[in-house]
Image 1 (tube, rainbow, N blue to C red):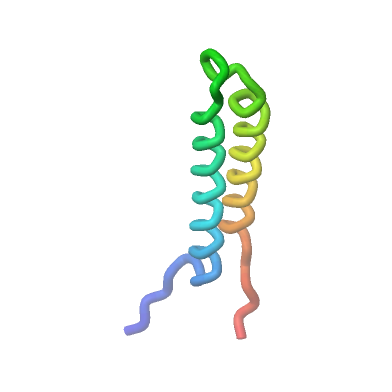
Image 2 (image 1 turned 90 degrees about the vertical axis):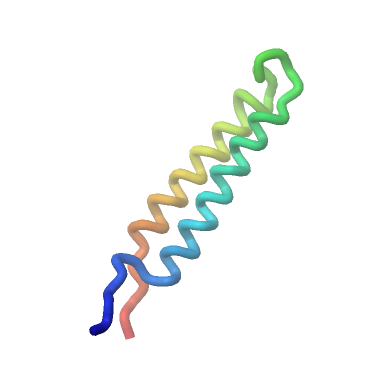
Length: 68
């Protein structure tokens, strides 16, 4: 009996890339040297990268490769 997974291999690869982008956003926020993370990295760049990572995750979940 063949099992059917809810996502294709491409979806899982894209989700892994999205998790990597989210992790990168948290790392960027954590390396900010300003007090309490109130510098450019902690308040601007890190959250923007996080947001892009979450958008990429939504794309990865909704992506539907054509069945052949």
